[in-house]
Length: 62
Figure 1: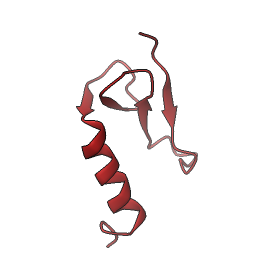
Figure 2: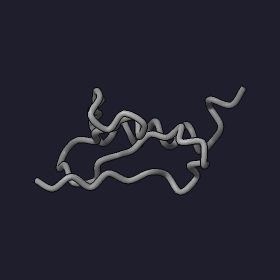
Figure 3: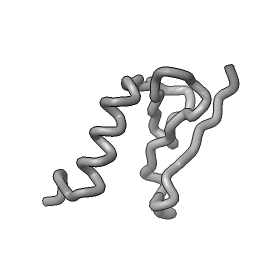
């Protein structure tokens, strides 16, 4: 299994980003880009897609 960590194209220059590993089948590992050797959260693909959809439609906007 090859790690393929990617950051959002919307990531700014402040370095406050999350990265997603696209090389893991059947799960979505997520980590803090500032701490690449720190903890990793792992989500089921359906859960991650629901989260992304909620972000895109503004469910978390203040």
